[in-house]
Image (tube, rainbow, N blue to C red; front, side, top):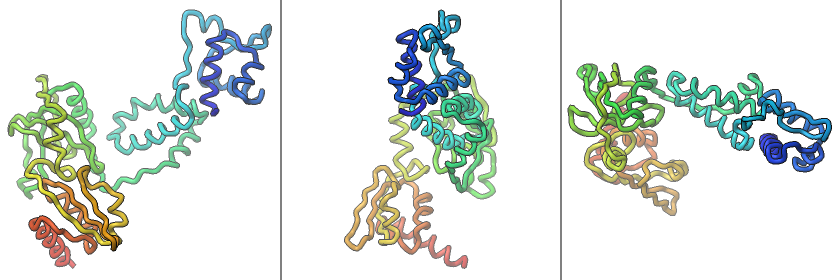
Length: 327
């Protein structure tokens, strides 16, 4: 058993038997006397366990004053060492998503305790975390104050008033658009945050990029909540982040070289893939807006052919011709 499991075992034995002879602890834990002494010292000094040596019985017990009227528990000892390592990995992933350390500052004490459980000092903890690296490209940062306020609105079920700037439409897109929303859920997609909300002005579900919000104000009115199934049916059936519109199915054929990678990727939960004898791959998937699908197809330019529909094939060809014209 690893050290964390030994801590739990020591705690359990002392709690259930009152005072445990040192030979019993050695036999139950299957460790040397020196290892047991180190474990007991760590429990006392780092985890504040009120463990005392009883010379009369040559065993260990909880101190009478510390134990009386309370139930001592070691924080987190139900987690194994492997599970603690997994949580540290999760911590690194969280830092990659955490805008302005909104969550990190609240969770910092938890991860400090995990470091203590693993016997790590500050330098060792930093070194361990550097062994896990997350690479984010084209990341769009949201306003920290807006992110926290939007998150509160979603969780509390309150309405929001936002000032929103659309990216499309050239100069017109820079105009501030004020809307009242009933927030439904937060969505994280490709290193950016979005808010799914019922827009009271347009009377429909819309998806708003948080980094395009110029202002946000929490209102006192209760949000109009919609069932999650309604959100999924309306906003999740498209390709990527784009939602709304008539669903169409794209049929794509990838060369054997590209297929070696695409065969292991999920472009859409409903995709259908068929590998041919020559190694090429035919992929069928639904979309409602071709914008993001075209962007992904351009990554495989020269190694993918759009078989259907004709409108998508024409749009892809126009993108390729436009790219060549820039050379």
